[in-house]
Image 1: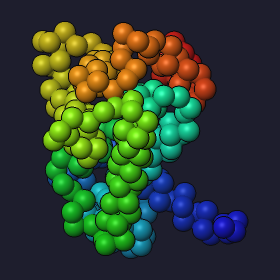
Image 2: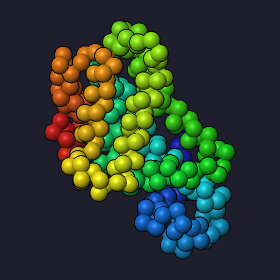
Image 3: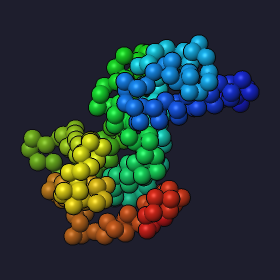
Image 4: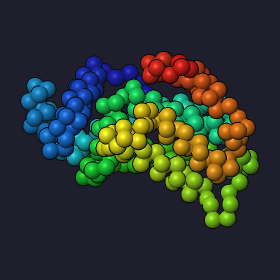
Length: 246
């Protein structure tokens, strides 16, 4: 890919600015408070300029989601490079997810708002295809680890179990936890859950123990694995997030 021209860089920078302002508007005022006219007013661009970047309000929302998913995907791609047992590699993905939420709270929050309200459904076909491919990419990577675990006998599936079923269970746990963190923080306090992502990681480990995915926690030091992932894959991010391993 060739070097971008100055005009292309200016267009890209303008779009980043528009998305940054739109994200703040979405988080502060919700979908109803996010408007193309208001975005133009706040950024001091003309409405025509805004529409050059986004064909509609729904297209703008999809662009927000693509930007957030791209950042998450970048962390997951790095986590995928971690060398270790299959269950350790799954932990690396969980750490990547945690870092995304801690270091990019605006992206994390806006992503959950958009997902749960299905606000991207009326976006342009191109952006919807991009979103679908981003989602598929992460699912493929997670399924790959489960398949390797099954092939190497780290995970022996019982009758009625499948690779897809294991991935679905993990995915459901993560999505459900994200939803609770965003919408029911007061209930987390009632449950005395002060570190929900740590709780999520622990619950995932409990689930994997239940599946007999080896090494079990009693057979392996996963705290040490956590430190390795932080030091080898995410040293700067882990430091910024306040992880001991960073």
